[in-house]
Length: 359
Image (cartoon, rainbow, N blue to C red; front, side, top):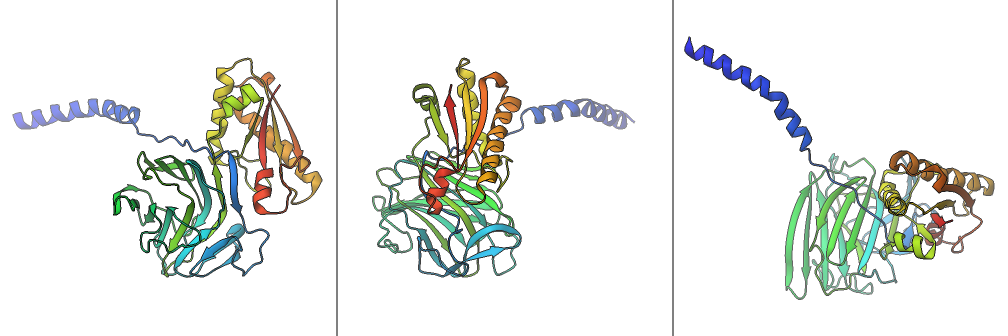
């Protein structure tokens, strides 16, 4: 009888404490901030829009095989990798110490696996003229990232270290038939990786020092046939605070929209947040937000789209970050003020932008 009474007392105490335990767990819930900001200067962009279906893109090199395709479930054009090997965008410009790489990926495979495997992303210090330099561990130095099943594995290596130096992993699962926006952000030795609006890796010593990284390499095996598009490489750290306060103008390539839409993509959040922070720290600062497009499509529709996109950014600054309406104006110029000729995917990417001008 005493045992039963003691049991009832203990259970009653546990029930009383359970809400406190639950609340404590909720208050201590771990979150990860999406802090990606693309580089200031775009040095490579390819969405394969100007290339023929069935061709291999002219600005890429491979020892495998692939072709440009369209897909019912994924709008736009895609480079599908159809054989094992390396696939390298040929970028003549140096990456510098600070650079970003972004792309959309659908990691399809031929075995029916529901998750990703057989795809490696490698940042290399080497020679474009000799992609096989180093053999299985390419270049003079490099860092490889391998998302596989429910983990993202990484390792780095260098000639100075005589091979592999460090490695690790982080849990994350890419679904084989789902489109994901992937981004890498390198700041000297620091390497961060993002999938859509989630940060997967943040490695303070992910890149080995004293090497100039200048090659982005996708490596696959023969069991996968993934899709890639909207591949963008940009260099330099954006200095929006100095550009707005001193120069009076800042050009952002980090504010992105759905195709032919004024709907902001989730990966735009950090760039808009940084602009909001500058405005909050400088309460007298007023900015005009101007949208720009490339020359694809109808001129009148592009003008309307650029105005609506600028208005979406203004709305986000007001509603999410509390910036006063009288400090913001919005407008659009459509395709009328290009920064470069609209004659290549790279130049078109330079022209699709949002500008902030002090007034």
